[in-house]
Amino acid sequence: MDLQFKRLSEISSADIIELNNNSRVLRHMPLGRPDFDEAKCAAWVAEKESQWQVNGYGPWAFLVNQKFAGWGGLQLTEGDADLALVLHPDYWGHGRAIFAEILRRAFEEIGLESVTVLLAPSRTRVKGMLWLGFQPDGEVCLDGVRFVSYRLRASAGD
Image 1 (cartoon, rainbow, N blue to C red):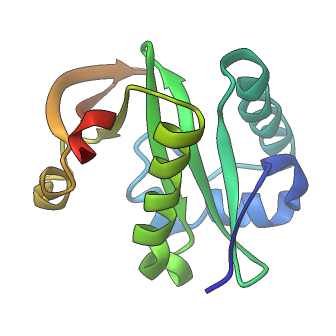
Image 2: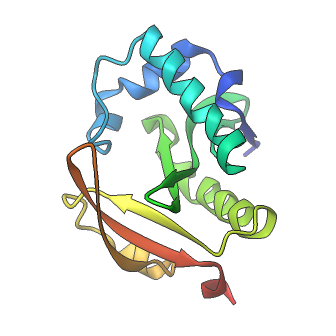
């Protein structure tokens, strides 16, 4: 597998719109809506890109074998670097490799002490998160939606 991390601004808006409106993807995105159009995409990409200037990190686009597979990475949420991973269903089998590379960059290149993952309370299958070293870390409310937070510390891998 050839995995590349690109900036979202390098990806066609049609590809981003298709992903962010995909019904199978939206089932796992409580803040997503199936009305993600060209105007919303442009504003969304601009906001995601601005995080790089403000925080020194932000979301990437993921390409698998030169094809847009999804987006994710690190976003400042409630004072923490929150790890997001949104993949097109055709690429769900590649999540573990992408996740590992995000963590490597977060801890080795960016030097973060910890990252969080926010899951909707409906996501009850969290055994994998715990196996990876994430620990429950309270709750966060974003846009009126409650999420359960899990934290992974850089030292957990030592």
